[in-house]
Image (cartoon, rainbow, N blue to C red; front, side, top):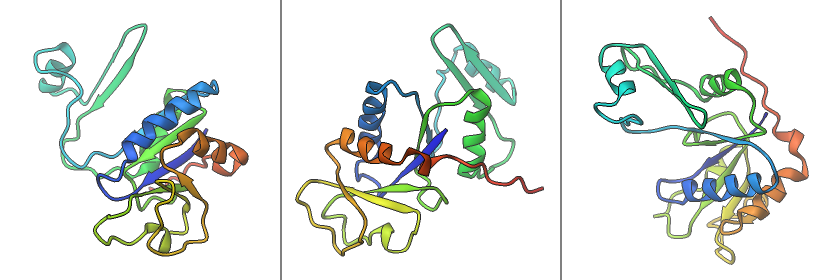
Length: 181
């Protein structure tokens, strides 16, 4: 499986870009999965439904599936900060995707595309201090605050970004992080 991250300030358009990239990859017949870091508490199952009731009863994991969908929810007894490699391992166990988009792990040691929008309140480009940023996606014609020497891709043309990634897809082959006890 091949992995690329999307990083950038909150509100920069990472999720919108991810949606466009998913569609562009799928149009080429490629299966895409997503690893997303949520900063706030969230729920995917609805109160009163079976999966929610099982979690409320104390289940460690609930997997619910039908012939169209599978969802897995794990409850931690105490806060546990998973790193991106632990989350990617969950995807490997479920069967490989061709590509995985990682959103929300801006400091991860993965190739990333930085999403930049002008007027980001003077925030610096991550690319200036992160060797894992391989390109910047920005609105066409919108100058970056400083030169980076990296490819600048059109934020509004996800198919162009997929073309860029597919120029050397093996560059993004995922190697799991070594397991440390």
